[in-house]
Image 1 (tube, helix red, strand yellow):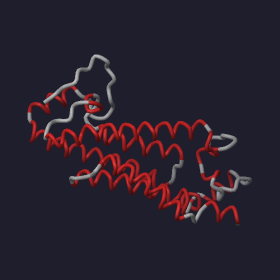
Image 2 (cartoon, rainbow, N blue to C red):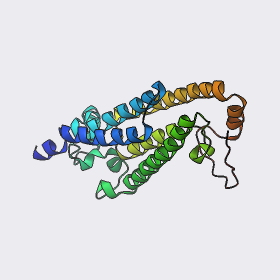
Image 3 (spheres, rainbow, N blue to C red):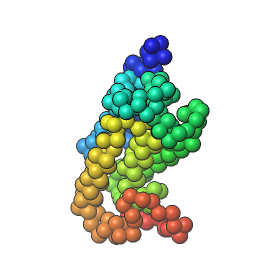
Image 4 (tube, rainbow, N blue to C red):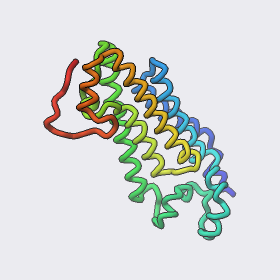
Length: 218
């Protein structure tokens, strides 16, 4: 029971980790519009659900306890290390924090954070000058900020999948797609043919890395 008490019920860690990631995203997003706040709120809900299960209450493990105990009778899933379900389900051995899946998830999360920081810097500079954002990552795809949020959430799913976050992930992807479409309608109204040309030459979600790409200015 001592291991169990130390593994979960750590609500201070839930709050601390949630605060760090949400504040980190907030510091780059600097939400001003309703769309900004909605995108940040959706990401925040995912982060809170994630760390609640990681350190607070392991709802997924309780829900799957019957199946897990039958399939892995010698594994105590109430310890933190065994809470990395994919580590056990995929047959990895050793410390789950150093398996290939966990390392990959960390790389994905870091790349997502880098993309988020870079994209929002360009976007807010464009907003301040009331111009169209087409430089930096916006020269490679039209919605790098939303792509970044999706990448970060996917990275966390590789590291610590839970039933709530697995359910939330596709829903939040749909939310970001709708927010992106709404932003595009606003941009079309504001920039007209310039934005239509931008749409025709720049993919929406998956960045292109054509070295011959030229920066467009409007």
